[in-house]
Image (cartoon, rainbow, N blue to C red):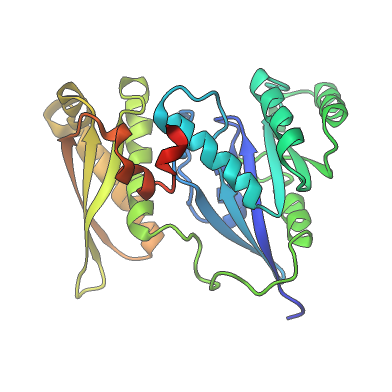
Length: 301
């Protein structure tokens, strides 16, 4: 092995641009929850990808959007602090949506805030015609001096290898920060909670937007190598408890089965998952919740 390289890449973009899918494609493990609801990546989850002698540490920033609530404001602050910490920034936009207001806002902030090299990554290229794609590339390159532009489809992997190789080449010479077998620096408890939250979000869609959090309360390693995991799903109102439980407990049973399967896969061994639902009315304004999600409570003040 020659000189090792290692550095940080901030993936930025609007909600739903496909950052989590791209991260999963590059890292090869389910680190950031993939869901079609916007603004679900709440923690600054990092994935670690290996490419030749380079280790690329991804800061998967929460989507940059106009903050409405305290939690949202903390998420946006976390996204920009991720940009400041990175060696390279990758701006992800959706081919079929083009230059939205949100993208314009991100570009303005990038111009003002960052001296880092920025790559433009246009995702979901399978959804537009070639002419429209070329026009978008031209438009974006007139708006900002990108170091490189990549056309990709994160869901099927097109173009992702080239992007990964380019990022690896731009990592500074440095020892690796993480052991080879460590895919994310989030504690397993939190990853397991994220998986359950993903399953709930996908199943409940509009019924329970964001007034929901999952915490791993207890984790016990069993003698047979399996893990017994107790999680609490916190909802904001009593009425939400019934939605999470579902008719005769069907929803929570289905969520538990799906989450258990993914958690077992993540651990590479059997997981026994027990879910409980509790009401905690003001959870969004509790500082401790923020810290567990890698966010700074004071950012939201």
